Length: 351
Ligand SMILES: *Cc1c(COP(=O)(O)O)cnc(C)c1O
Image 1 (cartoon, protein in one colour):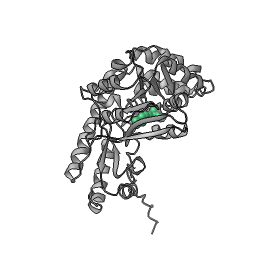
Image 2 (cartoon, protein in one colour; image 1 turned 180 degrees about the vertical axis):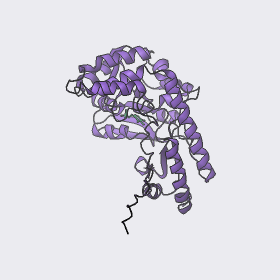
Image 3 (cartoon, rainbow, N blue to C red; image 1 turned 135 degrees about the vertical axis):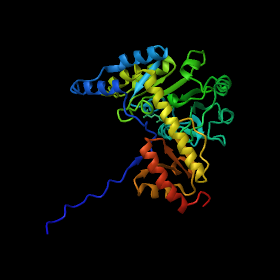
Image 4 (cartoon, rainbow, N blue to C red; image 1 turned 90 degrees about the horizontal axis):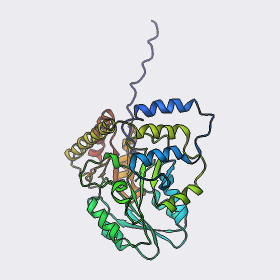
């Protein structure tokens, strides 16, 4: 009898929901720009990222000299920290929040001052203010916050900026800006960057614009700080395809971004309702991820990972009872729901 052809096992669907990456890849124009830039891969990119800074400046109504473009907004945080921090300085930020603030503060020998979030997972700006001392140099406001997804409204941000002592630079991190639909959410570049009070705002191409793998983000900074940051910047740290992709993304039609925003919001609402149906209480999120208490987060994340579903357990962020789930494509969200439903029955949230 002839040998049976060996049957391949059905591929296990993998769900990458651990890194807050956008559902979609680069916009169509950016894909073309990347392909075209690849052919110039033997050439150095433009020194000083002038063309991209001018384009960002034109798009957001800010002079190019106030803009620093770097290999992700994480790199802008690095340069800001290098320019402004040293031993004895203090940096205030929410807790839990994006870990880069703590790491970059520690790298400079400065002191991190974490301040608990509100119970809804947004920054508590009154407590942040109360934590400011004469040694405070930077005050981060992550809006919406990562990993919780909670936001602060424009009135709260304005009151905070008005009350913040002049020796502190507020750094408003808006990595998830284009996901937010709430009309109370401020556009900090437009609303706060043209006032007398120095303000820094961070944005990135890594999330809704789908360029996380290319590494490009920017900061709108007070002019002198931007100049100092560009001086210490690693030459050519924004590569040619990344700069080309970012330029093309700035010109993307608004409906293309709006579709992404709507698809993400729909995925988030579905995830929230599925989690609630299982008896969980996810935090209210306006971004492309949701934080939820699950009990032993590491055990839950490991059980999910064993079946190809990757989420972020938040132990190293200071929330060992919670995971963060990124909104992925519908097939991956279905897979998450199916596996999580089984895993959650074995490890109830109150364990
Ligand atoms: C993702 C993220 C960033 C930016 O990451 P880059 O890829 O380095 O641009 C910045 N801040 C927060 C809060 C983030 O979640």
